[in-house]
Structure formats: structure tokens, C-alpha cells
Image 1: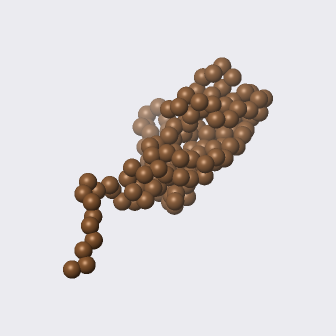
Image 2 (image 1 turned 90 degrees about the vertical axis):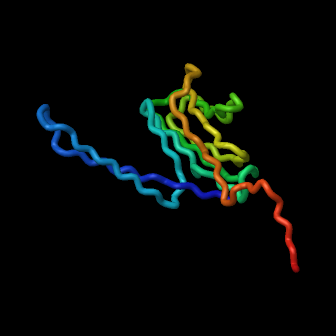
Image 3 (image 1 turned 30 degrees about the vertical axis):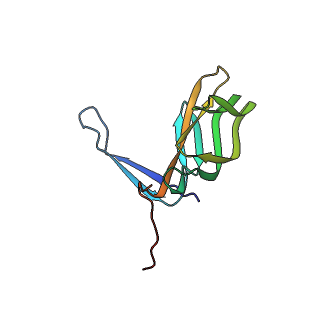
Amino acid sequence: MFVGPASVLTVSASTIDAKTPVDASVNVKNNMADHNITTLNNVVFTSKPAMCVALTQGRTCYANIKIEWNAQTNSDFCIFHKAREQYIKCWKNLSKGVHSFEFQSKEPVTYQLINAQNKPIAETTVDVSWVHKKSPRKRRWRLF
């Protein structure tokens, strides 16, 4: 089972000149849509869903994850699993890519987009949550 919040970011600013301070307001709305977007170095790196929800704390969470990226120029890129230090998928001379896979984890996992110089240029995290907190005591059923 998986569910993830999405954020819609709305930024508004007043007139900007040398004498007037900038009055910027940020409005974040949580919806039931499920994505995590990172924009860095002119690259958009997205994971859907952004959150995996297990039934009980400490259990492995399972979800089908879709990671997408878009760059302004063609180059070599790889998706990298940060904790395992393992390459997931690589592309040669492309400006966008998509990779879908089955996610299994008890903890949040961070994925990075690596460029041709083997440097991370963007990252996204799939968070893990649960419906019921783990109870330290066993529950015993009694009928009488």
C-alpha cells in the first residue's frame, strides 16, 4: 500500500526595486497526489510516489516507484542508490529518462542523478511511513 503527499508551491512577490523590500509569500498545499520533485542544476528529478506506507512500524514497505529526469542538454546520466552505493540505471547521450521498479524498504531511500563526471547533480527521497505504531506489548485476545 502506498500513499504520498504532493506539494503545490505558489510564490507571489510585490514590486521589486532598489528602495522597496521584497514581499514574497509561499503557499504549500498537500494533496493526495504522489510525487517528489527536485530541480537543481537545470535538471528536474522526480520520484512517484514520494512516500510508501506500511501497515505497521518496522515492516517492509512495498511500492512501484517511477523515477523521471529531464535535463536541458544531452549527456550521460545514471540513477544511483545512495545508501547501497549502487547504480540502478544509466543512459547515454540523452536529455530525459524514466525508470520504474519495485521499491522494498523499511527506511527512507535517497536516489541521486549522477552526471558523466560521476558527480551527483540532483536527488530525490522516497519516504517510508506506517499506519500503526509498533507496540512493545503483545496483544492477547480474551473471550471471557
